[in-house]
Length: 105
Ligand SMILES: [Zn+2]
Ligand SMILES: [Zn+2]
Image (tube, rainbow, N blue to C red):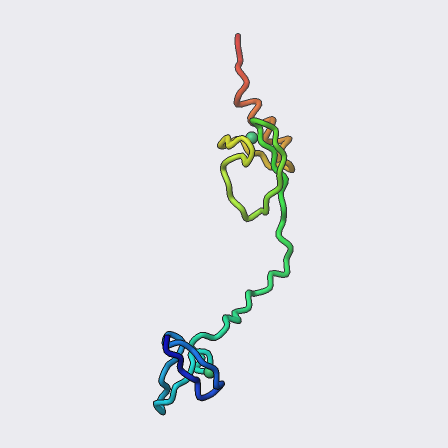
């Protein structure tokens, strides 16, 4: 492998990391700035994301998820559509109970 010496930092690089600049000088991609370290700062989320407690109505597995995370399946038993947010559990339980209730006359 041929090594090229960057005229700026005087370090040797392979041909894939060396470029010719406008002055036809060998310059490494790092000095050239094409491979800058990505310093994209993620916007700081200052609000603490709400964590909701869920319970699976099938296996009664209790777990927590961030409020923004959407999911359909119980992580434990994989049952779909049986996840109940715990803080709403009472009303949901009543609701599902009344829906499941079989009225026999
Ligand atoms: Zn260099
Ligand atoms: Zn489950």
